[in-house]
Image 1 (cartoon, helix red, strand yellow):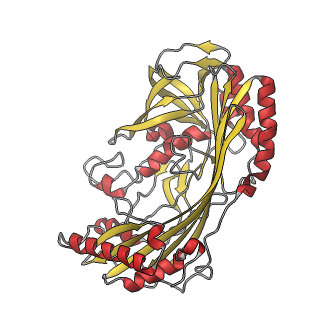
Image 2 (tube, rainbow, N blue to C red):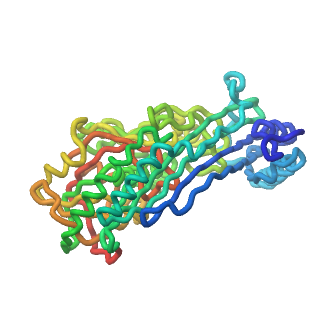
Image 3 (spheres, helix red, strand yellow):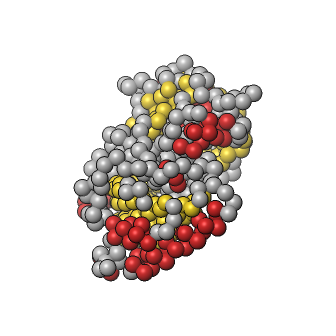
Amino acid sequence: MSGGAGGLLTPPQIIEVALAASRADGCIVVVNGSTSANIRWANNTVTTNGVAQDLSWFVVSVVGGAAATVAGSASDAASAEAVRAVVAAAHEAAVAASRLGPARDAQPLIEPTGGAPADFDDEPVDTSFAVFDTLLTGLVDAFAAARSDGRVLYGFVDHTVTTTYLGSSTGLRRRWVQPTGTLEVNAKSADLRRSAWAGVSTPDFRDVELDRVLAPLVARLDWAKRSIDLPPGRYRTVLPPTAVADLMIYLAWSSGAREAHEGRSAFAAPGGGTRSGERLTDLGLTMFSDPDQPGLAAAPFVVAGHSSDDVSVFDNGAPIGRHEFVRDGVIGSLLHTRGSAAEFGEPFTPSSDNLVLTGGQADRDIDALVADVDRGLLLTSQWYIREVDPATLLLTGLTRDGVFLVEQGEVVGAVNNFRFNMSPLDILRQAADVGASVPTLSREWADWFTRTAMPPITVDGFNMSSVSPAT
């Protein structure tokens, strides 16, 4: 069989060769073809740039209700024979797994409801440096302004387009093109003692106005000219959308139904069952994922290379709809695979690769929230977030690149860094003021989860547990 670009089989060819070679009870093949373009800069100068292509794929083989996954590399796509070798390895692994009995999440593979999409045989979609045309012009001006004003800019911008192909032995064929763009900028004073960070997520950079990204950084560096020492304690704290995303993403990742039913998470109810239906706040906050969310579109079907409590390889290709983690201030449904849904008698509830929190006041932004703080903190960035206690979803982390004291509605200076201890559930319980949701980028989880829209939130009693020497 002839190949595509570079002599490799095309993604549809890999799928059809693999499925034809499979001797398993069931087989799923997923192929990801991606292109990425990136630019890095430091000291107000572009330092590196590049364009890369990647092809990755895996085969899920099902034997006797047990499943095994074997990944293939780009070199494994060089010939039909190489593809068949990966299928054979997956089959052997599934046979071995079947000796232990069916998998806990075993379910019949998803059946097709129609034919293959019209674009299934199309080549993967590429990106190029052209996606940065407008941004690069802005960067040239930003470098000049930074040199003139005694600032230094560091940053990284990346645009990746991944085309996912999914095929199964039931005849299912799915295809999805996912563009992912991120921009991260650090602005520092010339002596490198003051620093501020901002990040943006975008599908194509057409919605990115660099001036609007950099302006808050200039203001924060100016605020940091005055340094203030504060002790640890509980402070009324304003979190911008990026900091809210850091915490809400972890809440979503912790919303598995099985863990809750088995008493292993903060969503486990005393005496058994789950906390679904428990009120967190009287504010009308709703947090959801939805593959059709405008500007944050994500794959509308399940893609899973391995099974866990919350995802299952048996669900590959299953449609995804809107999932509400929190509904009008109340804990919504938790995440179920088809296997766990059948076991606990609840609906199958997959989530998509985006997250939105709504319900704040549409006419209020972060400046409006700060203006209403008599004395408290503005926490613009946090990092190294880790779980302390899964029973309460208590997280710990450090402030970084900008935590400021607010007095009578005005920022009066930068304060020392803190270690904080907070549960994202308590962020919602203790939310005192919530603004409008806007697209944002989590700093902590930007390598794994980029599609979020969050509001700024003022939290009462945010726990700064100790002073951190980190700078």
